[in-house]
Amino acid sequence: MEKNMQTENRYNLSYRLKQVKKSRWIRFTIVAILYIGWTIWLNNYWVLFGLLLLIDLYLTQYIPWGWWKKSKNKALRKVMEWVDAIVYALVLVYFIFTFLFQNFQIPSSSLEKTLLVGDYLFVSKLSYGPRVPNTPFFFPLAQHTMPVIGTKSYIDWPQWDYHRLKGLGNVKRNDIVVFNFPAGDTVALKMQNPDYYTLVHYYGRDAIHRNKDLYGDIIYRPVDRRENYVKRCVGLPGDTFHIINNDIYIDGIKQQRPKNMQLNYYVATNGVRINEQQFRDMDISVADRTLLNNENGYSQIMALLGIEPETNGEFNPVYRLPLTEKALKKIKNYSFVTKVIPEPGYFGGDTYPLVSSNNWTRSDYGPVWIPRKGETIQLTLENLPVYERIIRNYEKNILEVKDSKIFINGKESPSYTFKMDYYMMLGDNRDNSADSRYWGFVPEDHIVGKPLFVWMSLDNDRGLFDGRFRTSRFLKNVSEE
Image (tube, rainbow, N blue to C red; front, side, top):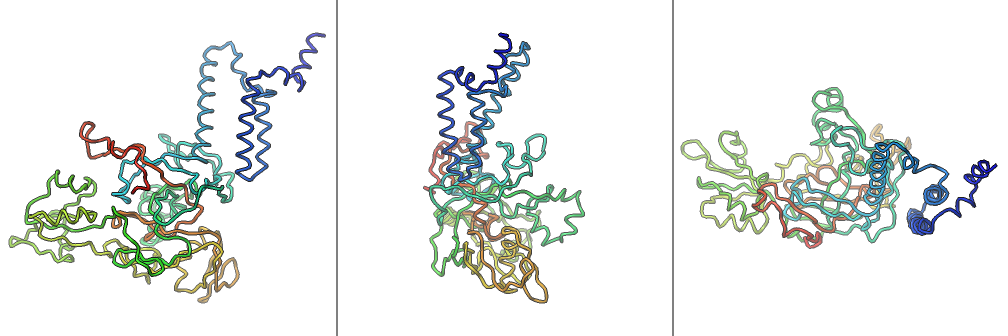
């Protein structure tokens, strides 16, 4: 009889609630309030069904969440303690990285000297509003590939539509922005630089897909699982964007250059080589120093630059260097420097859109109108290459050209109305930056967040006791750059 009563009590809701300690009620109340607030922020009230799990986890415990705590197997209890702690930590990291902030490391020199290779950034998701994940099931510490094992770090299903939660503001001109790489939707795994679309432009789609030994598998990545990039926003939705001789014009008005902007120059000397201290005085990293010499076959570039060989047929040292205005003035004052020649824009190769009719260069680009949500543009065969990727890839339409007429989703379409805002993003290290000049517009659904400050910075060119830790950059406000 007593045993039957114990069994009945085990499943009796009121009995279970009476057994709950006051401390668990307090913890449940705090978590439930946070959860309800998060649901309101999401504006998705179906998520409230998750409260049932919280009620059982903290109060009723019909599901034996802590079954392992009663096990007599000491090894099992120890292992499960670790598993329990790791699961809690991963769930916490998942929510923090998805909705609040995340760490980002500067991997390339495209924003030098504003941000340096080795800078670790604190990136706020709240600044522009966090995105609800397109791919909700992913390992929170890996962008798209699991370390060591090399498998995907996410599950393809389900895929949710783009939805951004309310944030503290919008992207502004000259903001430094972290975003997902727009041309990273399709990836050749063994050759990811240049991107897939550039490879197809140069070698053809069939060649890329057939040669797996060289290019690897061709895969698709969802928006939020694409590579993270960081650039400066130089063009906003609705702007007419133009670059003339490396200066940006918005709606015909010349914009001020970033104070740390760099351009490439060819520096010829009378035979003297630039020493390490001089490189350091100009703040030029080892990776950015290129010496053009006779052995490397740079004679064609020398001829294009108008640099003549000496009487013995050999060239004196010529360096290709990215220089700020400050460094440019300094190098011109060195007595052994004979010429300082700006690198021509066409040295940067083909720009977006990748069509034979495009004669824009990285230093003279556009003019081009940046799409704004809700605005309509008249489509022609001439401007279609500029907006084709938006219409087809980013806004998921079927785009065709038949008999010189444009068809969208099977209907002849002389115009198109955009569904999202778009941005132009450039690096401050202008001649060494893969940016919007090469792969086009950044859609609003690719925006990740805003870097607030550098929390740590490491100089790969220095030793541990020779300035490896750039302490002067620790906690440096990115907006000050």
